[in-house]
Length: 218
Image (tube, rainbow, N blue to C red; front, side, top):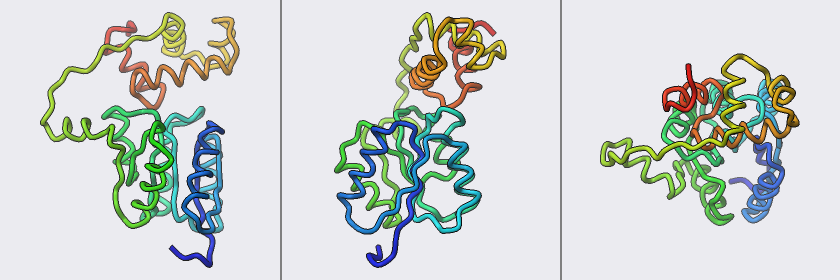
Protein backbone atom coordinates (compact mmCIF):
# COMPACT_ATOMS: atom_id res chain seq x y z
CA UNK A 1 0.00 0.00 0.00
CA UNK A 2 1.46 3.38 -0.94
CA UNK A 3 2.70 5.51 1.91
CA UNK A 4 2.70 8.80 0.00
CA UNK A 5 -1.01 9.03 -0.80
CA UNK A 6 -4.08 8.90 1.42
CA UNK A 7 -6.11 5.71 1.63
CA UNK A 8 -9.78 6.59 1.91
CA UNK A 9 -11.85 4.28 4.11
CA UNK A 10 -15.64 4.33 4.38
CA UNK A 11 -16.62 3.34 7.92
CA UNK A 12 -20.36 2.82 8.49
CA UNK A 13 -20.86 2.14 12.19
CA UNK A 14 -23.49 3.64 14.51
CA UNK A 15 -21.64 2.72 17.72
CA UNK A 16 -19.04 5.38 18.52
CA UNK A 17 -17.11 2.95 20.73
CA UNK A 18 -16.56 0.65 17.76
CA UNK A 19 -15.68 3.62 15.58
CA UNK A 20 -12.90 4.39 18.05
CA UNK A 21 -11.83 0.73 17.96
CA UNK A 22 -11.38 0.85 14.19
CA UNK A 23 -9.49 4.15 14.36
CA UNK A 24 -7.16 2.52 16.88
CA UNK A 25 -6.69 -0.45 14.56
CA UNK A 26 -5.85 1.77 11.58
CA UNK A 27 -3.37 3.73 13.70
CA UNK A 28 -1.75 0.40 14.54
CA UNK A 29 -1.46 -0.46 10.83
CA UNK A 30 0.37 2.75 9.98
CA UNK A 31 0.02 4.66 6.73
CA UNK A 32 -2.15 7.66 5.83
CA UNK A 33 -5.67 6.31 6.31
CA UNK A 34 -8.46 8.87 5.85
CA UNK A 35 -11.54 7.53 7.63
CA UNK A 36 -14.94 8.79 6.48
CA UNK A 37 -17.25 7.67 9.29
CA UNK A 38 -21.06 7.56 9.21
CA UNK A 39 -23.51 6.39 11.87
CA UNK A 40 -26.44 5.75 9.52
CA UNK A 41 -26.94 3.89 6.28
CA UNK A 42 -28.64 6.90 4.75
CA UNK A 43 -25.62 9.09 5.44
CA UNK A 44 -23.36 6.44 3.94
CA UNK A 45 -25.46 6.23 0.76
CA UNK A 46 -25.22 10.01 0.33
CA UNK A 47 -21.44 9.80 0.77
CA UNK A 48 -21.23 6.99 -1.79
CA UNK A 49 -23.34 8.78 -4.40
CA UNK A 50 -21.54 12.11 -3.91
CA UNK A 51 -17.99 10.83 -3.46
CA UNK A 52 -15.37 12.87 -5.31
CA UNK A 53 -12.65 10.36 -4.49
CA UNK A 54 -12.31 6.62 -4.66
CA UNK A 55 -12.50 4.50 -1.51
CA UNK A 56 -9.78 1.90 -1.02
CA UNK A 57 -11.69 0.00 1.68
CA UNK A 58 -15.14 -0.09 3.27
CA UNK A 59 -16.06 -1.37 6.74
CA UNK A 60 -19.81 -1.85 7.08
CA UNK A 61 -21.91 -2.77 10.11
CA UNK A 62 -25.04 -4.78 9.28
CA UNK A 63 -27.27 -3.59 12.15
CA UNK A 64 -27.67 0.11 11.36
CA UNK A 65 -30.47 2.20 12.93
CA UNK A 66 -32.18 3.18 9.66
CA UNK A 67 -31.50 0.70 6.86
CA UNK A 68 -29.67 -2.59 6.75
CA UNK A 69 -25.96 -2.59 6.06
CA UNK A 70 -26.59 -5.07 3.25
CA UNK A 71 -28.24 -2.24 1.29
CA UNK A 72 -25.14 -0.11 1.77
CA UNK A 73 -22.92 -2.98 0.62
CA UNK A 74 -25.04 -3.48 -2.51
CA UNK A 75 -24.83 0.23 -3.41
CA UNK A 76 -21.07 0.26 -2.83
CA UNK A 77 -20.59 -2.82 -4.96
CA UNK A 78 -22.70 -1.28 -7.71
CA UNK A 79 -20.64 1.92 -7.80
CA UNK A 80 -17.19 0.45 -7.00
CA UNK A 81 -17.29 -3.13 -8.26
CA UNK A 82 -13.77 -4.06 -7.15
CA UNK A 83 -13.85 -2.28 -3.76
CA UNK A 84 -12.83 -4.49 -0.80
CA UNK A 85 -15.86 -4.49 1.53
CA UNK A 86 -15.44 -5.88 5.04
CA UNK A 87 -18.47 -6.59 7.23
CA UNK A 88 -18.04 -5.88 10.95
CA UNK A 89 -21.08 -6.96 12.94
CA UNK A 90 -22.60 -8.84 15.87
CA UNK A 91 -24.74 -10.95 13.52
CA UNK A 92 -23.18 -14.37 13.02
CA UNK A 93 -25.98 -16.42 11.45
CA UNK A 94 -26.05 -18.00 8.02
CA UNK A 95 -28.83 -15.85 6.54
CA UNK A 96 -27.11 -12.57 7.38
CA UNK A 97 -23.71 -13.91 6.32
CA UNK A 98 -24.99 -15.06 2.93
CA UNK A 99 -26.92 -11.83 2.31
CA UNK A 100 -23.80 -9.75 2.88
CA UNK A 101 -21.61 -11.93 0.68
CA UNK A 102 -24.16 -11.96 -2.12
CA UNK A 103 -24.42 -8.16 -1.93
CA UNK A 104 -20.68 -7.83 -2.52
CA UNK A 105 -18.83 -8.22 0.79
CA UNK A 106 -15.42 -9.90 0.63
CA UNK A 107 -14.87 -10.45 4.34
CA UNK A 108 -16.95 -10.96 7.48
CA UNK A 109 -15.77 -10.18 11.00
CA UNK A 110 -17.48 -10.29 14.36
CA UNK A 111 -17.17 -7.40 16.79
CA UNK A 112 -15.85 -9.71 19.48
CA UNK A 113 -12.66 -10.18 17.50
CA UNK A 114 -9.49 -8.64 18.95
CA UNK A 115 -7.70 -5.56 17.59
CA UNK A 116 -5.01 -7.87 16.26
CA UNK A 117 -7.55 -10.01 14.40
CA UNK A 118 -9.18 -6.89 12.93
CA UNK A 119 -5.80 -5.52 11.82
CA UNK A 120 -4.86 -8.85 10.23
CA UNK A 121 -8.20 -9.02 8.44
CA UNK A 122 -7.72 -5.52 6.99
CA UNK A 123 -4.26 -6.45 5.75
CA UNK A 124 -5.65 -9.67 4.24
CA UNK A 125 -8.52 -8.02 2.38
CA UNK A 126 -6.18 -5.34 1.02
CA UNK A 127 -4.05 -8.17 -0.38
CA UNK A 128 -7.07 -9.62 -2.16
CA UNK A 129 -7.83 -12.33 0.39
CA UNK A 130 -11.22 -13.07 1.96
CA UNK A 131 -10.99 -12.90 5.77
CA UNK A 132 -13.70 -14.53 7.89
CA UNK A 133 -13.89 -14.67 11.69
CA UNK A 134 -12.89 -18.08 13.10
CA UNK A 135 -16.22 -18.17 14.98
CA UNK A 136 -18.02 -18.37 11.62
CA UNK A 137 -16.28 -21.56 10.55
CA UNK A 138 -19.16 -23.73 11.77
CA UNK A 139 -21.55 -21.84 9.45
CA UNK A 140 -19.29 -22.49 6.48
CA UNK A 141 -19.23 -26.19 7.27
CA UNK A 142 -23.01 -26.20 7.68
CA UNK A 143 -23.42 -24.52 4.30
CA UNK A 144 -21.18 -27.21 2.84
CA UNK A 145 -23.53 -29.84 4.22
CA UNK A 146 -21.30 -31.27 6.92
CA UNK A 147 -23.45 -30.16 9.85
CA UNK A 148 -27.12 -30.85 10.48
CA UNK A 149 -27.45 -29.52 13.99
CA UNK A 150 -30.86 -28.00 14.75
CA UNK A 151 -31.13 -24.23 15.21
CA UNK A 152 -31.21 -23.10 18.85
CA UNK A 153 -34.54 -21.90 20.21
CA UNK A 154 -35.23 -18.19 19.90
CA UNK A 155 -36.22 -16.32 23.04
CA UNK A 156 -37.54 -12.77 22.90
CA UNK A 157 -38.49 -10.75 25.96
CA UNK A 158 -42.17 -9.80 26.50
CA UNK A 159 -41.38 -6.19 25.56
CA UNK A 160 -39.57 -7.25 22.40
CA UNK A 161 -42.54 -9.42 21.42
CA UNK A 162 -44.93 -6.55 22.10
CA UNK A 163 -42.85 -4.22 19.95
CA UNK A 164 -42.67 -6.76 17.14
CA UNK A 165 -46.45 -7.20 17.29
CA UNK A 166 -47.00 -3.46 16.82
CA UNK A 167 -44.46 -3.36 13.99
CA UNK A 168 -46.19 -6.26 12.24
CA UNK A 169 -49.37 -4.15 12.22
CA UNK A 170 -47.58 -1.35 10.41
CA UNK A 171 -46.80 0.97 13.32
CA UNK A 172 -43.77 3.26 13.06
CA UNK A 173 -41.01 3.36 15.68
CA UNK A 174 -42.41 6.63 17.02
CA UNK A 175 -45.91 5.16 17.26
CA UNK A 176 -44.59 2.06 19.04
CA UNK A 177 -42.72 4.24 21.55
CA UNK A 178 -45.90 6.15 22.34
CA UNK A 179 -48.09 3.04 22.67
CA UNK A 180 -45.55 1.23 24.84
CA UNK A 181 -44.69 4.25 26.98
CA UNK A 182 -40.98 4.10 26.21
CA UNK A 183 -38.49 6.41 24.51
CA UNK A 184 -37.61 6.28 20.82
CA UNK A 185 -34.04 5.28 21.71
CA UNK A 186 -35.36 2.37 23.81
CA UNK A 187 -37.34 1.19 20.80
CA UNK A 188 -34.13 1.26 18.76
CA UNK A 189 -32.34 -0.75 21.47
CA UNK A 190 -35.11 -3.37 21.44
CA UNK A 191 -34.90 -3.52 17.64
CA UNK A 192 -31.16 -4.17 17.69
CA UNK A 193 -31.57 -6.87 20.34
CA UNK A 194 -34.36 -8.53 18.35
CA UNK A 195 -32.32 -8.50 15.14
CA UNK A 196 -29.42 -10.12 16.99
CA UNK A 197 -31.58 -12.81 18.60
CA UNK A 198 -33.48 -13.57 15.40
CA UNK A 199 -30.31 -13.30 13.30
CA UNK A 200 -31.90 -10.97 10.76
CA UNK A 201 -30.95 -7.57 9.36
CA UNK A 202 -34.25 -5.80 8.73
CA UNK A 203 -37.81 -5.48 10.01
CA UNK A 204 -39.42 -7.60 7.31
CA UNK A 205 -37.08 -10.50 8.04
CA UNK A 206 -37.67 -10.13 11.78
CA UNK A 207 -41.46 -10.34 11.43
CA UNK A 208 -41.26 -13.27 9.01
CA UNK A 209 -38.86 -15.26 11.19
CA UNK A 210 -40.86 -14.59 14.36
CA UNK A 211 -44.01 -15.79 12.61
CA UNK A 212 -42.39 -18.88 11.11
CA UNK A 213 -40.91 -19.73 14.53
CA UNK A 214 -44.30 -19.49 16.21
CA UNK A 215 -43.34 -16.44 18.29
CA UNK A 216 -45.76 -14.16 16.50
CA UNK A 217 -49.16 -14.81 14.99
CA UNK A 218 -49.47 -13.95 11.27
